[in-house]
Image (cartoon, rainbow, N blue to C red; front, side, top):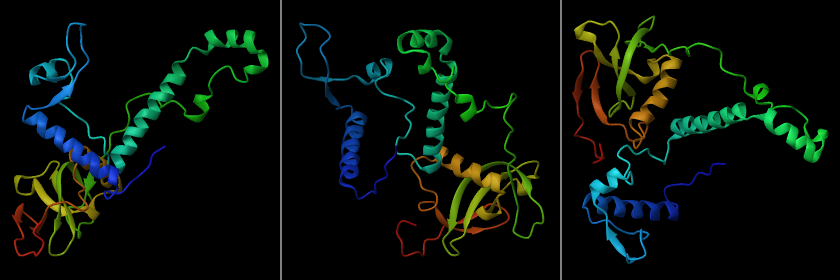
Amino acid sequence: MCAGVGPEEEAVVKLIEYFNTIIDSIVNKTFLHYAKSKSKNEKKGPGFFDFQKMEKTKIVDMNPRCFLLQPSSLQSRLKESRDKLITSFRNFEFGAYNPVISDCFGVEAILHPGSGIEALFPPRPPGRPKKIRLEAKKDSKASSTTRVLDIIGQATDSKTKEIYVLVHWDNSTMDDDITWTFLRDLSPSTLSWWGSESERRFPHIDLVKDAPRMRITLGAVLLEFDITSDDSSE
């Protein structure tokens, strides 16, 4: 079960303040924490944790994963947890436990010799999953899509409010190797892929609300940052 709360929730504000304080103290190497005594002779109390020791004992995760997830990342994490649960049901040794359960509770207690997980979640067909074909139109007038090697970033035109993505085209010449194109000109599968991939690459940024705002000229990659906006955040 998942519950959603807004940023104005009192608990969220307190959590942010607490974690900011802890992070600042770790960075400044002043972090104090009460640790359990390893021996009877050691006194309980605040102890200074050496950063290198914390790394060696894996107290500090050098590759942390954000737990305040955006929609696509949360969906992916839930699917990962569900797949682990499905795998555990498939690997469970029903043949070893069913006879014992029958002896204790009777044959009628075993309605099905297995979990029935195969009927609910059929195994994935053999072979490698089909690789997503990334495609997009180079411009709105194009009649067909072009292969995309990667998408580097996303920005909003501060004048037109149009959303653009910086596309690295596949098998292109040097002049049009990397150009801006409209987000709406991505193919449906590419748009879905970028929705998840952008959250993975930029876990703390909502690219719809907080993407860089700039003046974008199409063609060669040329950025003209807008400094005339009244919004200082732009």
